[in-house]
Image (tube, rainbow, N blue to C red):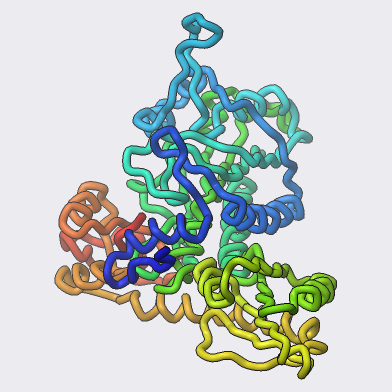
Length: 470
């Protein structure tokens, strides 16, 4: 059986599609565009979810759950919102053997249903801010599905908050963006760039949209999380208001923000290589896999107990019907950071053979030192992945001032350039190069000049990241 994958340099898309299946992360669902997340892939999501959920709760938000089915009339209350999602909606028209009086939308996002509830729950300024989060599934009809990246149904969290004024709501919008940046950088080892979306790339119904953008190993961008300041748009549509201390009735300012199972795809494409997955230790379902050789399984299980006590996620692969070499290759394909090989001679010498996922060769490590040594080795590996991804991103990001250099830059990575801000110009750039504005980096220095495409004055006072994207 061929366990390898197509090299990235030969066909990155084929590499990805083969890897998510062969690494046992996902399988295709029976309905078009759906996916079945297998236990190994779902464990990645659980670990990411736990880290993000803890941070969300630590900042005062509470988890709730809202219905999957939303009355069609709810979406129609905010015109820009329904227009933006109309091509992606799945609609229920019949139930219980009868045609429904009003069609129901399978939620593509929950601003409308949560807005309806907020209007009921908020009456006074004392009720603010209202800080809610939901872990759920959503459905957006996808014409060109790709596992984890774009599927008809996917998992996510969506934060929804209501505030007394713009300043408080904007503070929340940036807080959520910061949480996403932390999780991407510190847990997934992805050096994302936080920034604001251009008007043409904003979320439907938002006043301002912010994003974290990561660079994949083919030079393309992936939007890894977004945070939206909605202004009073949804408050106006759903009458989300409060009585101020002055006694005057005011509209709330709302936010929404989300991170999805797309992050698993981001981890795969940021760190993987021609041998398979490369998983950051803080996200790896198994940080260490022990492979017994011949009759050492009992001793390996004893070692695993000691490693678990030291906080290491460990698995003993003692499948006797498979050769050690097959098991070595399988766990390399599945991205395990550290592999330990233990044979009879190793036990006699009181050592194990240690192999690191990205390092050549092997080393002998005393068994007694492993519980203290492995956590340090894993942290070093985590940091090395972040440094490796950062170096790759920086090497493939070019500051450009001419159209020729722009086109060359976005063919292999990102272009940092000045832009006029006009959606029509963005459309021309996309038509000619397939590149879109990924974000206006928050940390970008002030700079003025003319647009790289049309020579009109730049609109943002700083350079914009353009790149091809998933």
